[in-house]
Structure formats: structure tokens, C-alpha cells
Length: 240
Ligand SMILES: [Zn+2]
Image 1 (spheres, rainbow, N blue to C red):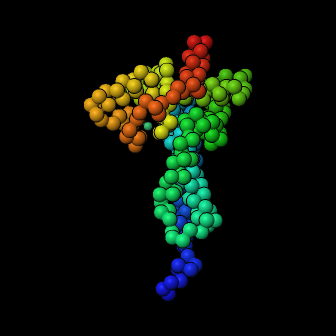
Image 2 (image 1 turned 45 degrees about the horizontal axis):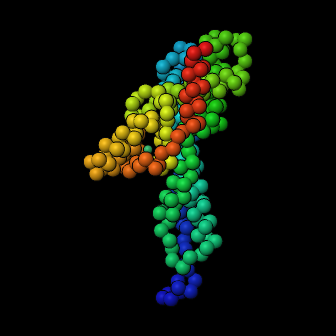
Image 3 (image 1 turned 45 degrees about the vertical axis):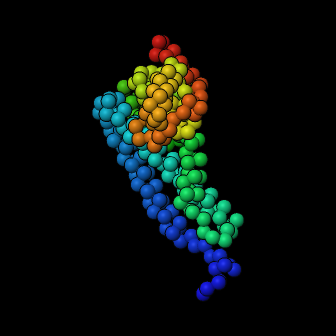
């Protein structure tokens, strides 16, 4: 029917709906992964009372929690964009993918590693492990699982991953955060990389493996005071 679409634009969301339903299937798989990881970590704790394997399970759990968070955010992005289009009723179908990507990146940019550690799913997991350790006698029975203890656990876990500079591979002293991709590095080390690359008239890539930020500039960096405080607290905790 020629002309009809110019009077009454018909925008179909069928493809969006079917993509969303397959994402929901992913969510089910992630939840299964979380359950299986919990079971394995609990079994390992039961038999070995907290070993390297258990901390591998913690890493795995963090991966699942992170995937879960991104999936939630992607679904949120699709929802936001769909609602926006339904409201604005543009004459032509806009570039859905670009809009969703943009919204998804906005949401993702708010992410940081500490929130992951504080997520309900990860805290629940750590709590279960703690209980199991107590049951098998790897933890003193008279100590209660206070919120404080969990915090300390989180601080320790954090130190193993987040306090290490991706460039120097050493614990950071002056961490700076890249506002573009959210990664943090030792200030001196990243500035040296940027300056060297710029001298060669090249762009400086974010040195974090898997990060697709290919143009890091000094303007993107600001002092990561939260991380700095966490590192300092962690040092105090270690010295006790
Ligand atoms: Zn990065």
C-alpha cells in the first residue's frame, strides 16, 4: 500500500521482542551457572576448608555476577529505547542498534568493580561459603558472621584483583580512573604510556586486556579516591 506508511508510520518491535526473549534464556543460563558454582564452591570448602580452588570459584562467581549485571543493563537499554520510540513516534524507524548501544554504554559506564562485590548475589555467595567454613571447622565457631567480617572478606577479595595496576602489576599507590572505560591504573605508569604513544603520533590503548578503549588521553583520567581509600584500608587490615 504505497503512501500508507507516510501517513501512519508502522514500527514493528517484533524483532526486538524476540531478541529480548532469547536474552531471558541467557539469564536462565547465568542463574544456573551461579547455582552450580555455589554448589561446587561449597563442596570444595567442605572437603578442603578454603583453598585455591575456592578462590577460583569466587572469580567465576564474579564473572557470572558481572554477566548478569550487563544482561540486566542491556535489557534495560532495550526497554528504555523502545519506550522512547513509542513515545516520540518518529516518522522513520531510527537506528535501533545504535540507540540501544548508546544507552547500554551509558548504563555500563556507571559500573565499577566494588559494586559487583557488594551485589546481593555475591554477598549471598560469600555468606554461604562462610557458613560452610564454620561447619567444617575452618573458622572459629565463636565468631559470628557479622557484616563487618563480610566487609573484611570483601576487602581481601578486592585486593587480589582490583588493587593491582594493569600496567605495573603492582599494588597501586596513586590510582587514576579512566572516565571513558572505567579502568584504573597507577597514575605515573599510564601517563608514561600516553606520553610515549603521543610522541610517536600514535593513540594510547587502554592496557586492560579486553578493553576496547583505543584512545586514552590524560584528560580522561581523574584521581580514583575510592580505590585509593580501599587500598589504604586494606594495607591497615593486613598489618593487624
Ligand atoms: Zn579500559
